[in-house]
Image 1 (cartoon, rainbow, N blue to C red):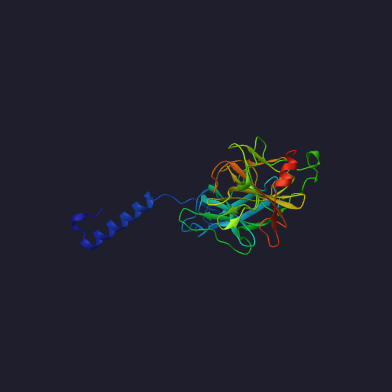
Image 2 (image 1 turned 45 degrees about the horizontal axis):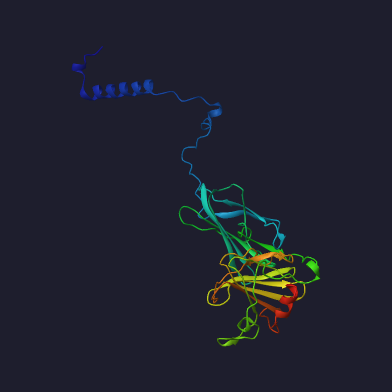
Length: 318
C-alpha cells in the first residue's frame, strides 16, 4: 500500500472523497420496496405530503329549515321549527329565529337559540304564550360564525319559510240562561250620572258605562267570541281587551290591572270566560271597569257605540 505521506495532494483528495461517498451509502436507510416502482400509500388517516387543507366556508348556510305543521289554528298548538346550519371549517354558529307578520313584516317574536353545532339537526318551539292571529307569517333563520360572518342566503337555501294560521272556530252562540253574562264576576256598583254613557269628558263624550268594583275582581266575557285586540294605553284606556262576540257586536273592557290579561289576540273564549281583572290603569282615578258595546266593529269605519246600561241591568237580573 502506498504511503500517504509520499502521495500527491490531488490523489489523496480523490481517495478521501470516494471513501466519504461509500460511507454515506452504507449508512443511509434503505427505502421500502414497492411493486412496480410505485411509492407506497400514505399512512392511514394522514394527509399526503404537499396537499392543501380544504379552505373553510366564508359564511354559514341554512342546509335545512322546516316547520311542522305548516298550517295551524289560532290559539292552539304552536308549530315546531327544525333547522340545520352548515359551514365547513366551523364547529359552532350562533343562531336566532325571527317570526314576522305578513305583509308588513312586523316582528312578532324573536327566539335566541344560542350556539349550536354545525351540520346537526336542531328543533325549537315558539315561546309559550305567543299569539298567532289568523294570517300569514314569515319565519327567518339568522346565523353568525365566530368571525362575525352572517348567514349566506341563496335561491336554494334562503333560510326562510312561511306559516299560515287559520282562525279558530267560534263556539255555539248560546250563553247561560239565554242572556249575556255580567262582565264583572264580583260585587259591583253602576255609579251615578258621571258613570253613564254620554257623560261629558274632556274633549269628548263618555262612550261606555263605568262599573266600580274591588281591584283584582275578575272581568269575564258576556258572550262567546274571539279576542280581536289586547293592548296598553298609558294615558287613556290603560290595559284593555276587545272581544268580537257571536252576537255580532264588539265589547271593550278597559283599565284592567297591568299584565292581568289572560287572553291573547285570536283567542276564542266562552261566555263567562276570564279576560283580565278590574284595575285603575291608564286615566282611571280608581278601580273600575270601563265597558263599551259596539255595533259594526270596535273603532272600525261605520262602527258606533251604544248605551250598555240596559243590557248590564238585564244581565245582572234587574
